Length: 41
Image (cartoon, one colour):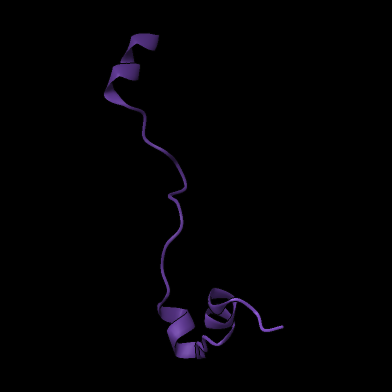
């Protein structure tokens, strides 16, 4: 039995070291509060 298309697609992706360094993202270190949260004072 063969694996599903999307599984093969993900496994066949090759990324070299230079492309790995170019990947950016993630979440910021601190989240910002919504302006309406000023009512906590």
